[in-house]
Amino acid sequence: MRRFYFDPIFIGLFLSPIPFWMILNNHPFNFNEDLLLTLLTVSALYPVVEEIIFRGTIQQWLGRKFCGSLLRLSTANILTSLLFTLSHLINHSPYWALSTFIPSLIFGFVMDRYKIIAAPIILHSTYNLGYFLSFGIN
Image: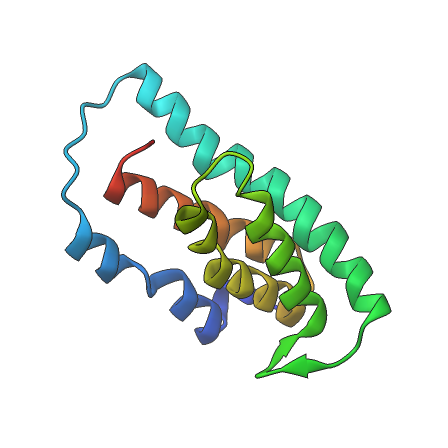
């Protein structure tokens, strides 16, 4: 098992969205218990469940069925990311669902690279937290 948290690629993927969140953040927050519970849900619970389902189960299963890659992304990752994006159409607008595709490819890439579910869970949790702190919770 690689120590993903020391890998410069993981560190770069972890830190890269921060400047965008800082530039685009224009949402004042009034922290209260409801907001804290919502932030914990979208930045802890959802990423864990989604990553176990999509990267830990579906991507691993597809990886056994399909070999090959496109631009260093596995076919299993691309197919899983398409499913991940489509799953967000259930509760979100098409634009919002489509905006999950690139992060999903990143989460799948780190799963393929490090072979440990903690890596995409940490990125997914961080990305969700940064997104919702920057743009608000809808």
